[in-house]
Length: 172
Ligand SMILES: [Zn+2]
Image (cartoon, rainbow, N blue to C red; front, side, top):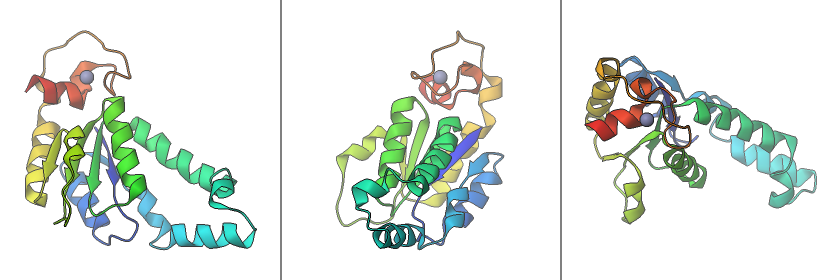
């Protein structure tokens, strides 16, 4: 199963989270992290130097390339995991994944403000060990499940229910 790991470019712990999840047997995409902590700042500087507004920059090749790179892997993933603190893009990404029928999880930091809408996620965790324990269950289970009818993508991510993380969570 593929995991799309969502987080901040400025969070140096992202590769460690990815490694821990990979060790459970998942294919983890955190490759967006390779762009470095200042990628968005340099993009902004570059576009401003060209005389472009934020609105124009979003239509540029650089922004479109980054968007389609990330979206390709988001669409392939069975599971989305948001590591907080994260910015607006991260919250959009997890919301999109939840709507698409991916299994979604959030690992919280210790926020000053509380938000009710985190309930869109299938699981909210405050300790890394608890998130990893949940993922371990998910990694172990799907192969043992009974075959069911296929469902449409849009309902859940995977066409074959035996490999669909969301079906596993709902059957539990
Ligand atoms: Zn399903």
